[in-house]
Image 1 (cartoon, rainbow, N blue to C red):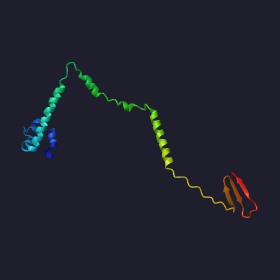
Image 2 (tube, rainbow, N blue to C red; image 1 turned 90 degrees about the vertical axis):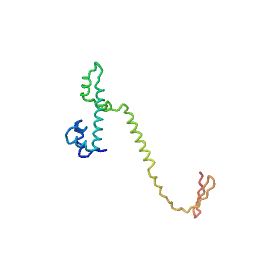
Image 3 (cartoon, helix red, strand yellow; image 1 turned 120 degrees about the vertical axis):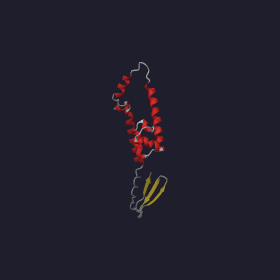
Image 4 (cartoon, one colour; image 1 turned 60 degrees about the horizontal axis):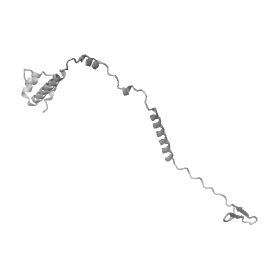
Length: 154
């Protein structure tokens, strides 16, 4: 059950007697009349008693216990964690190796993704008008006028 919304602030600042419905205050009167607020008030009183018992158990300190040391420790400023005070890495080679691997990967990716080279332009030679006959390691070239015959051994 939820208490009446206009009474929430009063629950937080009320004395235990008012929460129990005793007394003549406005909250005590309301707790006696409203069942939802009475349930919430009883739950608050039960939790307050349970917390009081837990604090009583904690306050039973062993003989000879010096609480001033705990108080001084609690009031001392807290030192930053050790990891926050370290300025450099113990293994700087890891950073260098990581950068090297990243650079190598970038080069490989650039090499793989590069466009293929353009095809060489086709060259057309003028036709000299020669007749070519080839057999084995010999080529015979003869011009159209048959004035010269070239034998080429290769």
